[in-house]
Amino acid sequence: MHVFDCFACAIHRMAPLCEYCRVPIIGQGVEVDGRGYCGAHCSRAEGRAGIIDRA
Figure (cartoon, rainbow, N blue to C red):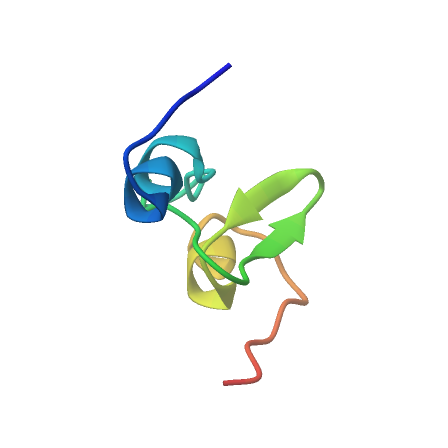
């Protein structure tokens, strides 16, 4: 069990990290073959194809 003083602290500690650049994925990231990325650019940098950002 985790107890945090604020929601921002919980996000910082519990958010998954991008498999490529290691940034916390807060909000929407992308998942390819079970690996999470912060966006399509990081998935492509690691050689994963077929992911397109819509923003």
